[in-house]
Amino acid sequence: MKKTILSLLGLLIASASTIGQTTTAPQPPAPAAPAPAAPATAASTPTPATAPVAPPAEQKVTVYGFVRNDMYFNTRRNLDLRDGVLGVYPLDATNLPIRTGTSLTNNLNEDINAVPQLGYSAIITRLGVRFAGITAFGAKANGMLETDFFGITNGVAGTSGGGTENLLRLRHAYVALDWEKTQLLVGQYWNPNFILKCFPGTAHFATGIPFNPFSFLPQVRLTHKFNKTVSLMGMIFGYDLAGFSPAGAFQSGTGVDAQKFSTTPSFAIQLAHENKKVLASVGIEGNTLRPRINDTRNPTTGIFGGIGAPNVVKNINTNIFALNLLAFVKLTSDKVTLKAYTNYGQSYTQYVGLGGLAEYRDAATGAWQYANQNQFNIWSELISTKSKKYQPALFVGYLQNMGLSNPINRANVLGTSLSFLGRGINTASSRTFDNMLRIAPRLDIYSGKIKVAFEYEFTTMKWADIDGTVPDASGNLPANTSFKPATGALARPFNAINHRFDSVVTYNF
Image 1: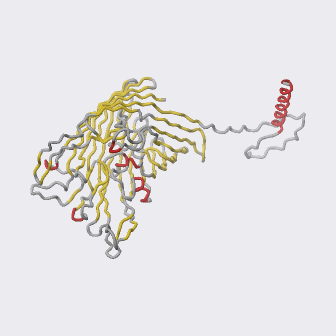
Image 2 (image 1 turned 135 degrees about the horizontal axis):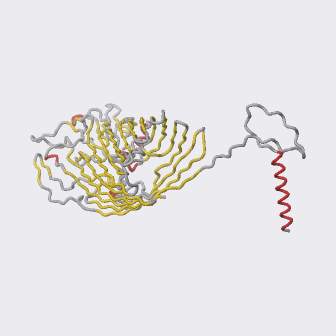
């Protein structure tokens, strides 16, 4: 029986071979038609060989990532995210002097933010997939899908472990097409202000936050290389995750909703120069939000904001536009790498930054009015790369609250409608940040696929009462406010200082 089966298989193989010799697969049209071939016979020679057809491209899939464990110690409470593994800034004092008119009295309570913490976390562990190897539309196609266990929300009142920590979040999910000089990227990727080739390499997962904008955005990005060193990038993109939107929900919803209802995509343009030793770029970015989508209006008087009859609900289309500017440079040599980055603008809250926008009702019409807060950020990092195993580094960051471009006159504000939406400025407590300085030396140690990092981080943040809320020597309040810090002892200035120690162990694969 076994011999019979083998004989049948041999017969089938021989038949397939004969068919393969007498049947030719369709070929692309040739430049000139070949001479007709003689009819095939049993004694004829095989059909002359034609040009070989390239096999289909094979898709390449690469799995990558790392297992990371963080241990940290803070001497003061901070505004932080997810288990405290990402600290943004040290919190203001809770026992400020009590101001009555033009006099101050001591507050006998203790500062509840002056307490240390020791934390551990593995939620930064990351897993990703890169895929490439095929062509489409005449371009080389590639893409990425990346996730980690950072989650997207904090616990109640910022508590650790009570949010979505340890759950997956989407970092990157994009497809890119690369032609000879042009790349088109569609999907979720870094925001335009986060420069993958020039970002802080701190051990603290903050990665330079809040000095360096950090987030992932759905986008359409087009990059064109004019020559070997000069390129231009342009993109349109959506707003970031709701969890990174300005503190205090918009009436239209989260920051994502406020950007959607504006029906205007955000945009960014960057011009870059790059060679083996120098990377430099300048850029501009614009964002449009619609914080509110409806309001009440009196059909007779046209005044907004009334309650009850005869007021009716009306849809409103008041948008606010924010503009950001950036510039950065990276210098690389055999022994050191120097990075420097600065930005100035009005829309950093969505990038886990400070600031935001003011809103109020116009005293005459009741209509909502908006004003952006301006901010200046700068950071620099110096890394010694002389040794491949031990690499000391120093990060320094500074930011400054520049206030509103045009101060708001309180006579133009209806009642108590003036408020601020954002981070670091609170109209309920009448407090604002003034400036922030961070100095963070570290040591990175490499051995094979394992990296160990030790870092000390000194952060000081100056707080004060909002200008316009502090009386002068006569006890009178200023007519205007720009949401900058007031000056003098009556502004109750306070320097919040935090000393942070990080140790991180990472296994890359």
